[in-house]
Structures are given as structure tokens and as C-alpha cells.
Length: 250
Length: 305
Image (cartoon, rainbow over all chains, first blue to last red; front, side, top):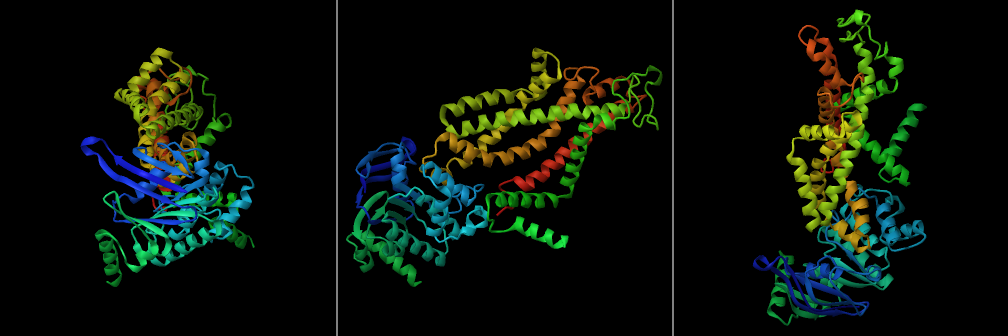
């Protein structure tokens, strides 16, 4: 579904150049849920943004559905296959667009017909009633906003969803709701997930396989079961697991 | 009965879960109106401007005399029952001239306030959104315009184009846009990397669509506030051009030109210059008050959250 091969991403020019991602290589099979974990600044969100075409300074190979992509140019087909949910639901919705405007624009851009009925179904899908259709973002809570953002991503009926820390800006009870929603949607729509998170518990719950990142490099690719068992091959992975366990005890 | 109907209409407008697009839009407008109404001074400004507009529309019925009829026997009369604000050097009724002059003032302000911000919005958002060379070129042009004092540049334009009210408007519009371009560019720079722009891009939205549907709505509110606050300056610039004889030509009752006419007699017959001066002052003040109120309503960084 998604292959990333020897991906380098950098920002800035030589004296101040920052190599955010170095030689990242992984593949995600159709229907799989793949996690990217690591500390802040380890380059995990950067990989997603490069895949989505939001960063132009990268080299290596990215392929979606065996179709290579280049630069920031993506074709219509790509946008129909891949969608993204952003970290901060307060920043990812246009403050002057109502839920209705957001969803109908997304549907129209994807060339969908029968927009009224589709909006109603999208809202049902993400667990928001019809009553939310004409609200503005400032009339919604964080969790509700994230549901709208997920609905917007689903509007294209994509097969691969890039999730950039979709729950880290929400409080804990809402986090669980959104994670359950994402799990349900995946089962229902046969979606493939690539999920970025710094929360090992979230990744262990959601992902079949995951890559552990440190300083822009992938340290280890392991299975979700191995993570739940606490069996990391590398020192850094064990260190990360230990740190997160210590954090939950405290 | 009517009381309860009013209550339900109010609730309908303020509903948190609007049922239709129209209800949502009307609700948002009503919310803004409530904020605006709470500002007493802004309301005062709005009332003055509504009166001004009414004056301009109904000038032929409101004016006690023709603004052009001369009466050399009754020149430079002080304010009295017959001429409420006195007469000028040619014996024309000053009140009538002020009432007719409101049309010219509104025409100037309205046209400049339409043209300048639109040029500025377009140039500023394109520069900010595109970046790179386009940004550099557009912003250096803006800098060149900003380097001239506004009135001097307008003078040069009018001198080149010929003195008339239309050219005065054009000159003012051409000199007024650079600050709006700067403002729009600054706003665009904060917006263009936002996640909601990235999300729209991922839906396949092209640059024109992003600019018009996503960037403009967020820039327009701060521009409107800025325009309302600049209106006073535009009126004064127009009056300044009129005063210098480069705007409205006699016998048009333009307020700045009227002050200029009264200048000769300012010591002995103060009302000839003071009355149009007072009119300019009141209208400028009203626009400033309105702008302040609009800022409370429209500023996206305000207390909306």
C-alpha cells in the first residue's frame, strides 16, 4: 500500500541544515495499521508530511499503491487514495467554515455527487448527529472537532489514512473515544493506517506493526505484540518502553 | 403574545445547533450585532452615518434652498432663523451646501473604500501566499508607493490626470492601497502554513481556490476594520485635495473646497469655514467610532473563542 525507501528529509540550507529524517525505509501492507513512535523531534511527523506532499525537500522513494510520487506534486488519484488527520483539531479546521462548508467542499473537490446525503452519512459515520452540520468550529469541543477532521478525511473515501498524533491534543477520556472510532472505521471501511504517536500505549493498542525512531532514523521495526510484551531488540526501544512504563506507574 | 414570539426568534437565532445553512449564517450575523450593539460609542457612530446616508439620499427634500442659488445682497450672513448655518461669500445657504456635499463625501469615501482594499487584498495575499520572487517584486512595488507621502503622491496623480472629482478619487485609491497590501500579506503569512490549508490542499484544492475560499475570508475582517478606521483619513485627504482646488471644482459643494472658500474670511466670518469643518469632524469621528466597534465584532483574535 505504502512503501518508503531510503527517505531523507531536510530543512534549511547547509550551514543551518537540519536532517529531520535519514534513510527511513519501511513498507505498509494493505489493511495494516502501522505505527511510528519516538520522542518529539525524532522525525515521525515529518515522514507523514513528506508522504502527503506537504514538504518538498526530500529524496529517496515514496510509493503509494506501487505508484511512485515526486516532490510536492500529487495527482487526483493520490488524493482519492490518501488522506491525513492532523494533530491539533483546533488548528486543522478553518475558523470561518461551518462543518457543512468543510465537508461539502471536500466532497465537491473529490468530484462526488449527491452531497447532501453523503454529508449526513459522514456525520453519522464519525458519531456526530445531524445537529452538528451547520455549526462553526468555535461551537465544537476538541473531540468533536477531531471527529469533523476525520469525517473530512473520509469524504474522499480513501484507502490509506495518515494519522498525525490524532489524539495527543485531547484529554484522556476523549482520546479513548477517538481511538475506538478510528478502530471501528478501519474495520468498517477496510482502511490502512499509518499512525504517528509518542504514546506507546496508544500505538500498542492500535497498531499491528510499528517503527521506533530516534534522531531521524528508524531504530527498529517490531510487531505490536512484541511491544505489548515489552520485547525490544534495541537498547533504545527497551529504554523507551521502560520510560513509558515508569511514567504510567507514577 | 408578541413577546413570546420575539423570544423564540431570538432563541432560533442563537441556537447552538442550527438546522439550516441560512439559520447558521443569520445566527452568526446576529451574534455579531449583539457584540456591536453593546458598544455604545460604536452605535453612536453608526447612527451618525445612517443620518449622513439619509441626508445624501433625501438632499433635495431636506435642503431649505438650492445649494447653487447666489444672493449677493445676502452674502456672509451669520447663522440666523432664515439661514441656519449662515451664508457664504456668494450668499449661498451653507446648510443646503453641506447637505448636498454629503453626497460628494459619501461618493469619495465609498469609492476609495471599495477600490483600495481590494487592490491591497489581492496584491498582499498573492505576495504572501506565493512567496519567492512574486513576493519580492510585489512588496518592493508596495514599498515604493509607501515611500511617498500619501497626499503628495495624490497631488502628483491629480496634477497629471487633471483636476476633477473622479481623478481625485482615483488618486486617493491609488495611494491608499499599500498599507492594506502589507496587512493582508502579514495575515496571509500566518495562515498559509496552517493545518487547515494543508488539509484543503490534500483534498486537491488548487492555489486559486485556497486563496479565495480559505485565505481571503480570514484577511477580510481585519481589512474591514482597518478601512473603517482609515475612512476618516480618506475624508480628510479628499477635503485636502478639495481645499487645494484639485478635487471637486466650483460650484460643487464639496466640504474641503468650502473650507478653502471660507479661508479668506476666516477671522471676520468664522462660520463660512467652521461649518464644513465641523461636518468633516463629525463624520470622521463617526467612522472612527464605527471602526472601533467593528474591530470588536470582526477581529478573529478577539474574544470569539
